Length: 355
Image 1 (tube, rainbow, N blue to C red):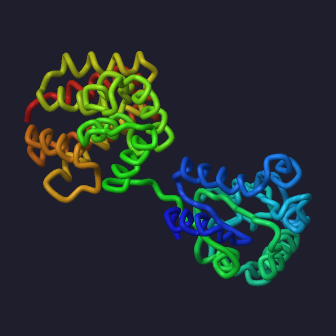
Image 2: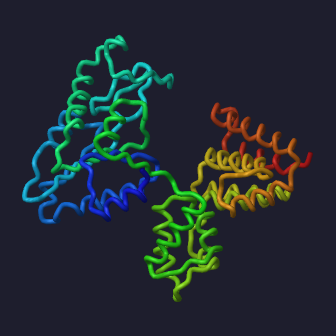
Image 3: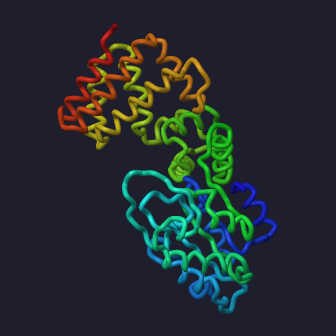
């Protein structure tokens, strides 16, 4: 399920004994973790709330805590962050017993058979921990709500499938496009404000889809705005311009073959603390989007409009040569063949050249 379905189940006060939260949207994940904390009366929370780190806490310990009866409360809440034992394993990496291990570094995944004899490795300690967890999941305590949190999962793993059988798996994906606009509108209304569509587009262009930062910026805008409406000019004045927003202006200058302005902007961004490598990455990203501008792009309409405008300044062959130069500059910096700032400025001059 996604967290809109989770929200509905919480409104109906339907609580599963076990949850697995995963995905990159940590703001919404933390929001719902806080809602679960409200299940425990505040005066008894210290006795019935355990927040554990799965990389430091053994699986047997987690299960023992989850099996403990609540004290003067109907529920015990156990939150396990960094539950890496739900992730895909790699070659040379044992199954997780609750502590992180080093792999071989080759990045190759191996099938999860959950069988040490088939793998040919001695995983008795780990297998013991996973068996304890599987036994718990087969008959979880109804007085405990156990929540595992991981940034990613391997859906083929048996432990993942066990969670699906006994509890709920909730994916926290980043919001995009319409959903992101709806979230901003909803958040603004909760602050007693209405946000104009152009203001919402400008806010997304400046901040991206980071809900934590968007929430912070909306609070600032609500405090600043004297009326009940947030306008595009309010956003332009109050919201900090990030490198992602500045990169539009930088590429506009490059597209206009104005290397003096582009070099000046790059120097200002580096002086402001932006790493050269990040600027190269964002420049490469922007040129990739420009190349895709003629087709369908899974980006915000504001970003698409900017890219289409910038695409008119280049032929397709020029764009390809620009990408090749960006990649070679990145390699030169990383291998020490060129000083980073000088390499960046020479790249900008090259990108501004015609033909």
